[in-house]
Figure (tube, rainbow, N blue to C red):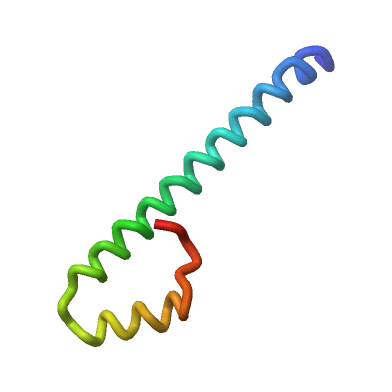
Length: 62
């Protein structure tokens, strides 16, 4: 059974890496959608809270 584990271990690692990359990309996309919603909002309170959240420089690239 050790040979079976040695066969599937690299495949499992590759699958986990693909899933992690896909999940990370999906989370960034959600943050971008939130950024666009905040940018379109005319309420000054929302704009101020967003500026506090991201600070002087946004931590993500758009």
